[in-house]
Image (tube, rainbow, N blue to C red):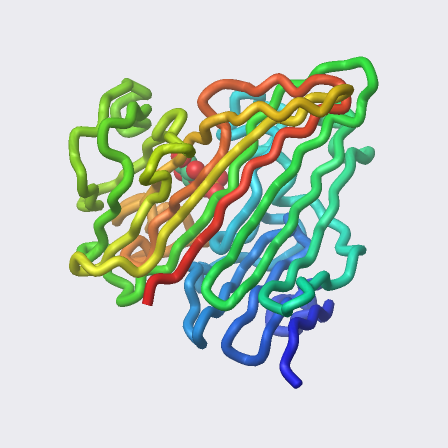
Amino acid sequence: MVGFSCTQISDESKGGMEKVVLSYGEDCRVEVFLLGATVTSWICDGREKLYLSPNAVFNNSKAIRGGIPLVFPQFGQPNSIMPQHGFARTSKWDWSCGCHTTGDDSEGKCVFLLTNNADTENVWNHPFLLTYTVTLSKSQLKCELSIKNTSSSEVFECHGLLHTYIRLPSDDINRLTAVGFESQQFIDKMSGGEKFIESRETVNVAAEVDRIYINTPQNTPIPDITLLEDGKPFLTVAKSSRMITGGDGTIQEKPADVVFWNAWIDKSKALPDLGEGAYKSYVCVEPGLVTDYVSVGPEATLTIDTTLTVIS
Ligand code: BG6
């Protein structure tokens, strides 16, 4: 009988690096490398939905180019002591909790953990527990990153983001449009960080794009971003974020930011682990909290999640 199963294997085609494969038969599967707890593949209905660069480096220390690298505790490199996008994506995570399935076997999940250690304390001296839950069902992948401040007295400030590389169905960025950003304010990194309001209902990519849509709505009738090819929807991206305070456990919703990024021709070429022409095959839609640092109080937990749903 088919059911969800989870196994850890060493991937000989990727330098023997360890990964966890959560699957429901052959056509429904997600792969997560312990390096960075990086989701590198999501197969739904037998087709790959995430983009992994053919030039991605698998050497247990460089961030994997593609899939869903996790950005924490900084986005970009405001603190030059830490690597760009923080250390979560280059740390070795633990997978210790097995495979959890719901009673009706409609979804399976696996959980990855990272706590502060000598390496993280060298560059960011705060105690934390990251819990990353990857949930697979027939047409959805949900990824939830929880950032807990394990100090009983100190506050820390951080960013967090799920740097999701979505594979375009026909490897053709010219056929992509996205709906769901209209009227939202964004920071345009291509214009030196200037802020604008998105006037377009339908957004396309015809040049390098690197923008942060700020505080995107999560409780409106259309909270999702829809990706379309030739006008036909193929995937939705939902996201939400919340803070659970230490002590009384009050939950405060926090509208997530969404980074929209495509390197286009020159930058693809300039990034060796992306490579010439790679820009045609992906778009990044990255939910997180990155515009301002978020203060996480003693024993509080900040959670950011994204749900990708295939439209067939
Ligand atoms: C995006 C940023 O999130 O990540 C871009 O907005 C950046 O500015 C891109 O170029 C890739 O970053 P990295 O560190 O993986 O090369």
